[in-house]
Length: 127
Image 1 (cartoon, one colour):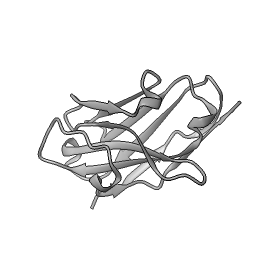
Image 2: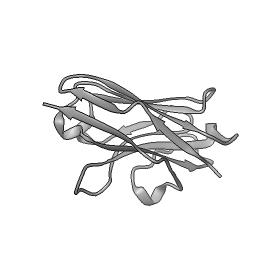
Image 3: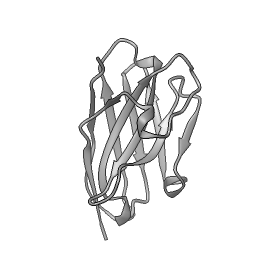
Image 4: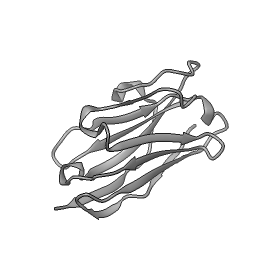
């Protein structure tokens, strides 16, 4: 069983930055493909960014490209989402997700791809 715990959310003004962390349990973290999703009030959960378990592949949705960076530290069983130049429309609950995979370069971008989810962390961007 994999447990994911997000942290780092909060209230920030537009243009500011936050760094989200997702700490994972389990001995095989280095084989987890990881992703970040978000869900705004009244909207469906949507993909934000993903990283392969090797860290060598990343992918972003268009609306965060150039502003957000996903990274991971396998020694700390943690994946990060650095969010810069935040906008009010980035306000949402952010979730991390994990999928154990044998493929070191695979990145996963849809909800059904993932097996494990965290409880989410609230990010609020004020205008």
